[in-house]
Image 1 (spheres, rainbow, N blue to C red):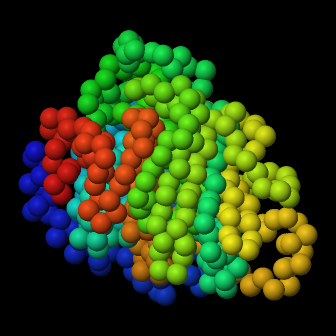
Image 2 (image 1 turned 60 degrees about the vertical axis):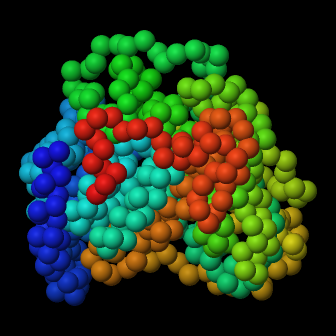
Length: 471
């Protein structure tokens, strides 16, 4: 690829320029309550509609970003117009490769709010050019892609943030404080659940092929939309959030909501990677799109002084987990952003988690929702002995931009979010193959299923896109 030469010859120069392009925060803006343009991070935004558009607006709202480029394969479609109108004079692109070719020396950081499968090539090219990256969850679609993203972030010494925003809110700081104080300890079982209706519910799970092609919208660059993925004929059920339904493009309910329910337990209980992934229940299995309901058990070994732990995932409207005595009422965080197809469908049990320790049981919601000790009587007895929980110094978007400026460290950097995302990729493999997988945590190989082991890498990237696996 011609861009390969560009990457090799210009990466070091661009990195050097970026190092001198941000004026220290002590010089401009802070004392007067705003940030001067020279004190902001020059940000390019890839994916500016639906959830990607919300990310752009949230990063801009911090006052820490100077939006210098907008990129979307459907630039000009209805769902991208709001962001375009917010920044009418900012250069626009439909191909991220062209954006970096033409504006690489003006970009310091990149937001990636595109479909799951396309996170990888955009993020890899950005990091290889020395750009900091904010990428929506999950990090990528395959185990190997996440592995390469972690390695590349370390190689190029860039700041990275996965967009599970609860990692900068109350649950993060509470979970950390309660583990350090010994309130959460000796955890042997965790339940994580998302039981609302999903996009593919109501589809016929007995289909035998992908949908027939439809006319491509005039505003859409359908070829670039695919990035590394193998070509499909256009269909409305591949775009505008519908990509999440398909194994070829998305990560289903697990990749979507696991990042908001499993994240703090995974980090602060040092779970790492599982040694066994067992699809206990797969309802409506087919080789094309996600099941109507799934129950997946992840087994993690003993870690230091922490006992072995089973984490079980439940999705599906009628596939709710058993609730412990004294569970009480299911609640959710009012700040959870709605899905791009409207409001979150009501469910008897809101998305969340249940954590079973030796002496205490906890319930929690998703995103930034805090934990409660159950039953309520036990919580009242312990109220006076619970540690003080510090407040977050910054939301998830500000945390990323402050890290780019050298003022904070990202709380969901790739070294933290990568292993969590790899848990999701293993769970999706078990869903797709409908079989138990045995995983060697040391060699990072599946030992009982040769096809599943090959699928850790994923399908061969389409011709012309192989370079992104070598950056």
